[in-house]
Length: 236
Image: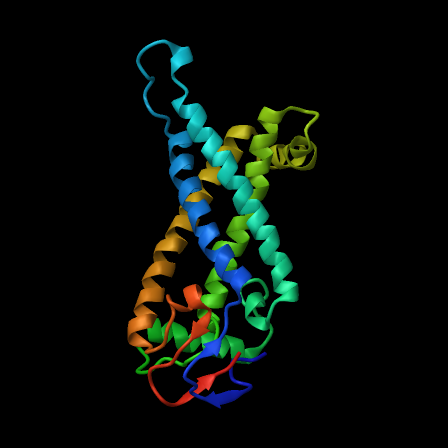
């Protein structure tokens, strides 16, 4: 629905984020943290450990944690796509923003001015505002798809030619990029895109909680969006 197509007077609380979305959000955040830290050390390995090699398995544990978190991330992402179809309309906001609607881009422009301190007042939304939905769609959804596909391609190398990971991903992803090291490089670079997104996401969520006079952070804990000021709310 258009952000401007239906307006309502501010309510004490509106139920926005269903339990599966909230659970996914925090599990996903934890998986990204593990993936980012372990991925950094995989790209820049620690110095060799002293003593007998068979007594040290530090990088092995780091790689195991990375692979385990990757599968948590993958399964969670697939579950999130499923919930976009069966959940409420807020569950679809970041996966399928209404890119063909002029009112959506009008909202993006207004929110961009608000974040740049060029607009005096923000618009209030029950779900994600248009700019937030657009940024999450580009910097998280598509980045996540890229990391899943390239990650499975790299994992398939270790699993071997007879693995499903190699058959479905390694066999065409690695030649597409040229060679394995190129896939590693782009996989590493997009990790920094996601890290940049997380930093922006946390800053904006806290900023909006304070300046927009509406609950943002707590909404992803309780599921309820509250508005501290009276007035109209753009109901998506």
